[in-house]
Amino acid sequence: MARKRKDAELIRGRAAHRRTEGDYMGVLLGAVTLEDWRDVVNGAKAAAKAGDPQARAWLAQYLMGRPEGKAPTPLNIVVQQLNGADPLVERLARPVIERQKYPSMHGNDGLEAQIRALVAAELADKVRAAETIENPATTRLPDESGA
Image (cartoon, rainbow, N blue to C red; front, top):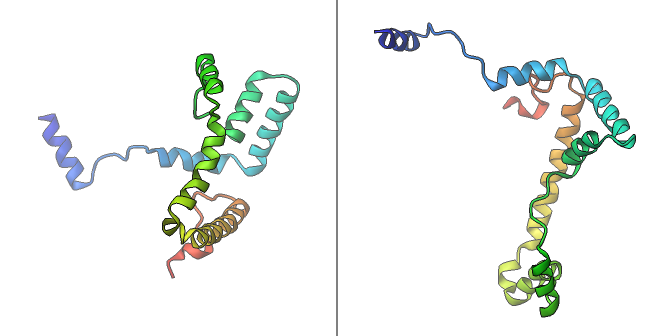
C-alpha cells in the first residue's frame, strides 16, 4: 500500500527533492574560493618541505598522478638483460617503426597534430576564463550562451 502511494507521489511531482552530488559540489565550490584553495596548497607545500610524508604524498598524487604500472620483478629484469631487450626503447621506437612500415596510415599525422594544438589552445583560454569567475559552477562562459 505504501509503495503505491509513493509511486503516485513521484508521478504527480510531490516527492521531496533528493540531494545529488551536484548540489553538494555546488555548495563546495561556492564556499571554497581560489584564494582559500591556494592557502591549502601552500600549507601542504610547506608541510611537505618540512618532511611531512602525507603532505608529500597528497601533492605528488595531484601533480603527477598515481603510477599506472607495476615495477618489473628482478627475474624479468635479468631475462631482459640477457635477451638484450629494453622495454623503454621498444615503446619509444614502436611509433617510428609503424610510420615506416605503414606510411599510408600516417599521412594525416600533421593534420591531427594541428587539430590537437587548436583544441588545446581553446581549452587553455576557457580554463583561464573560468579561473577568473568567482563561482564557476553556476556561471556560464561567454561562448556557451548558445547564441
